[in-house]
Length: 300
Image (cartoon, rainbow, N blue to C red; front, side, top):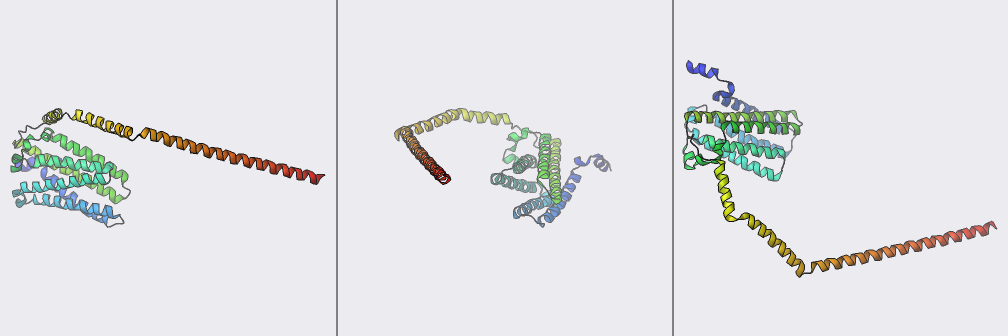
C-alpha cells in the first residue's frame, strides 16, 4: 500500500512505468499514421524513408513490450545491447544521408541519433559485463551529466520539429513530425530515469574519464609529430615545385607570346572592321551623291 502511494505521488514524467507505456502508445500511433502517409500520393524516396523509419520503431516497440514481461526483465542487458546496436546502425545511416543530401534536417537527425547512441551506451551498459570489459568508466563522455544529455535531446528535438513543420505542407506530415518528436523526448526521459536509478544505487558510478585528458593526449601527439611544421613544409614544397615547373617550361614566356598573338589578332581584326566600315561609308556617300545628281537633272 505504501508502494502504491509512493508511485501515485510521482509526476508522470518521473514514473518509469508510465513513460514506457506512453512510448508504446506513441510508437504504435506513429506506425499507423506514417503507414497511412506512405500509402498516399508520395514519392518513392519518402515511401522508403517511412518504411525504414518504421522498421526501427518496430524493433524499439518490441524492446519496450518485452520489458513488461518477466522474460524481458531477465534478458534486459541483452536487449540493451540490441537497442544500442540499432542506434549505431541508425547513426551510421544518418551520417551517410548527410553525404548524399546535405540539409539542416539531415544534420539535426544525425546529431540527435549520435547523442542517443552515446547516451544509451553510457547508461544502458552500466551494471553489465560490457561496461567493465570495454572500460566505459574511462570514457570522456561520462563527464557529461544526466541533465545535460536530456536537455540536449529536448532542444535538438524542438529544432528538428520546427524544421519539419516549416518544410511539411500536408497535415498528416505534421502529425507524424509531432509524434516523432514526442518519441525522441520520451525515449530520452526513459534513459534519464534509468541513469538516475543507477546513480541512486551507485552502480558503476565511479567514472574517471574526462575530456581534459583526451585533449592533453591529442596535444601530446601533435607536439611529437610536429604536424604544424609538416603542413608548412608541405605547402612550401608544393610552391617550390610549381615555381620550378614554371621556370623549366618557360611558362611566363609562353604566356607573354600568347598574349602578343592575341593582341596582334585583335588589332588586325579591328583594322579590317574599320576599313570595311570606311569603305561602306564611302560607297554610301557616292550613292547618295549620284542620286542627288540624278534628281537635280530630272528637275532641270
